[in-house]
Amino acid sequence: MNILITGANGQLGNEMQVLSKENPRHSYFFTDVQELDICDEQAVNQFVRDNQIDIIVNCAAYTAVDKAEDNPELCDKLNHIAPGYLAAAAEACGAALIQVSTDYVFDGTGHIPYTEDMTPCPNSVYGTTKLAGEQAVMEKCSRAMIIRTAWLYSIYGNNFVKTMLRLGRERETLGVVFDQIGTPTYANDLARAIFAAIDKGIVPGVYHFSDEGVCSWYDFTLAIHRMAGITTCKVSPLHTDEFPAKAPRPHYSVLDKTKIKKTFSIEIPHWESSLKACIEQLEK
Image (cartoon, rainbow, N blue to C red):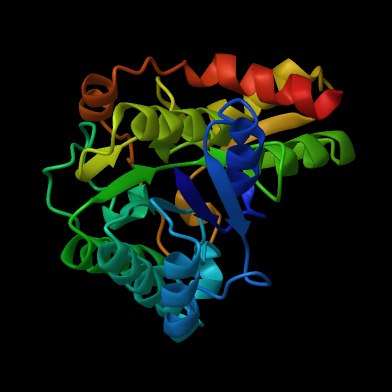
């Protein structure tokens, strides 16, 4: 099959590039904004048609959650309008689309893991535009699959794990919020789940994916430092209101993964074992 992966220079896009080497039977088109501007409807249609694309995996997004509050138009363009263009182009060619979404489509006021049939209720520009993108994709492409994920990190790009490693080595003390609960997700694990869906055959619908287990950002930081052998930095727990941010953060954003595990027969690793694998890669 001919597979187009947009946002190829991001965390997930890079992991998709790595795993494509394990799946050489397909032909891949890895694009970022330089190769294909997904906000250009005509360019998207032409690219998908000319290259006879069978599956699009959209890893491109505006993910700067706080900056999004000041740039709603740009955020909407990338997270809502552009996925709609990709979906329409896919539909016109009979292709499937995998759209990567986020736990931010929920407000995080719940206390049990979010299932796919729970009603979304975003409370930030980022979450609102990502939900609009989901809806545009489902409306315009009959073979669309949405995968919501959370707390993504990898050896590529900027992310929480890299930041905590750096700060842990630079500082003697560090405060991290303990009252926001979720699940760290290694982008390599998400990329493997996407390949599992491609191999089994796309089953349209909404799915949730993160690694197994739950923790707070504070617990996550302690684990990062422990695994990296950082002992000189004292990490203290903070309340969310002690750490002001422009966009509200979900207090509870644990995703229920039952549907994706059953549909595609995948086993998901615990977040600690994946974190260990990522840190070993980073320390090489």
